[in-house]
Amino acid sequence: MKIYAVGIGPGARDLLTPRAEEALRASDIIIGHAPYVEQIADLVNDKEIVSSGMRREVERCKEAILQATAGRIVSVVSSGDAGIYGMGGLLIELIDEVDADIELEIVPGISAANGAASVLGAPLMNDFTVVSLSDLLTPVEVIRKRIAKIAESDLVTVLYNPSSRKRTELIQEVMEIFCDVRGNETLCGVVKHATRENEECWIGSALELPFEMLDMSTVVVIGNSQTVMKGDKMVTLRGYRFK
Ligand code: SAH
Image (cartoon, rainbow, N blue to C red; front, side, top):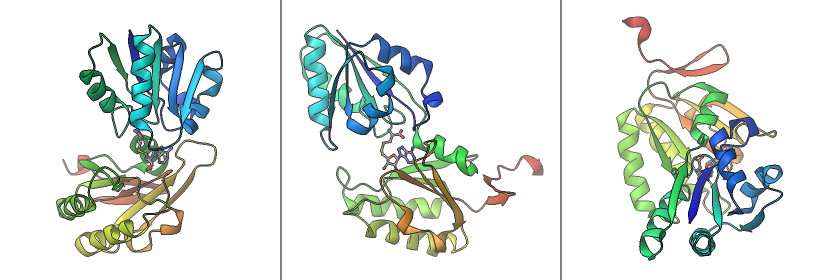
């Protein structure tokens, strides 16, 4: 009885790892959020597909457990990396709750942060942190507290889930905090659909961040005090040249 939690990367086919491809090919059934299954459709067209809408994560994992218990090899797909806001952790929790002898293999993927950073240049060259602004599972008060501390820490900051149709104000609040603490001129990048055909990219100062560009296919990278432009690339200086 086997379940793979497969990270399929940020979008580009050649950023899906050979190990992920092997897991998908070895599976009888592929379970995932519809757009992610769509992203790998050509690799799995001979498989049974169970795709579902957003926020059906628990349902999807339970279906995977049911199918695996029936003796089928199952892949549960996540975008990016399976263990970064992905399905890996939830599968571990739910398998732990059932009395079934299921082997779970987590197959890592290139996360949105890696994909986006490569589009911008190399902004993650020094210590950095990732925060999701989604308040579906984390209370907004907790997010605010974390952001306040992070802004002061001078860690380069990657924001996942920066803005949704329903949640547009939190990111504005967050950027005000970064502007206050790190300064209006702090260098920031926005990447939408990183590594996909419709990729878009913006680099500029924190004060001018284009909120209208943000949605759930976007990441924001907020630089630290050492993040600068070199030519057309955003880079966080690590200090090599001063050694
Ligand atoms: N497991 C995923 C993250 C899931 S959370 C990973 O490791 O990348 C979903 C968020 O990831 C989105 O709201 C968006 O902020 C970000 N994201 C995923 N793919 C992206 C891409 N190709 N370009 C930009 N952001 C992306």
